[in-house]
Length: 272
Image (cartoon, rainbow, N blue to C red; front, side):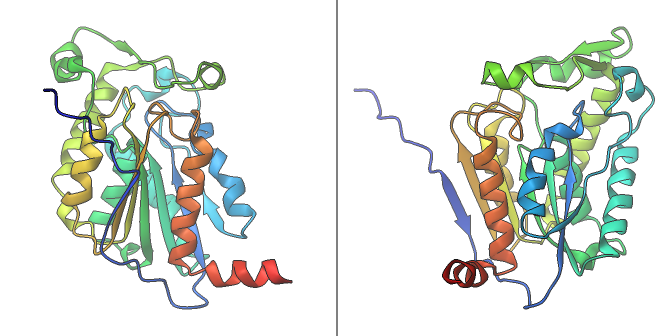
């Protein structure tokens, strides 16, 4: 007799999320993914501006232009660009929530794990399908292939054909840039125990690029006192642009509002 398939719970939580002190001003740092344009995460911006939440959304080195712009870019450049935006935002608000898609999720985790002058400003993190591992078996061959194959064609990261048609991601990328991402993911995986801020993870079990099971592991890898894992069932990898993007945004803004304890203010507003 075959074992019955067990449905994956939509939400797993560990620990208790404690709101920030009343009156704390919060900003959001939005980080796009590898080969992405800003449209990969910009759909979340209206959810922030509608609530008066400040934000920074930097273009990470080599992106938002042409694939050739990635040639020679190092993972440390992506981190440095994100950190510069974090510093800028931290000057305007009391605390920062970092939101990152894919490679941006890797950068998010590094910013949380490392100790730096802005560390006390980081209140929490949200990762959308963080690129800590890769589905494509050829990823393991990227290092030797990078000596012979200059560019690598990107794989499909959408489930909805209409959403795919609107995608502005690079159709190809330098193989050596992908090797940088591989090293970046490995380096970050080795420091996850140093991530201590509250963490919200969002991932689709139908992700074709980053294995969903890696986010299930991430749930237990970090030292955060509070972690939640949200499982989607229809989207591909591009969580900020695919068929469940609004669900991703709703999960993320709900996490932020619980962190800044906005539930009571919403109730007051509805009674006016």
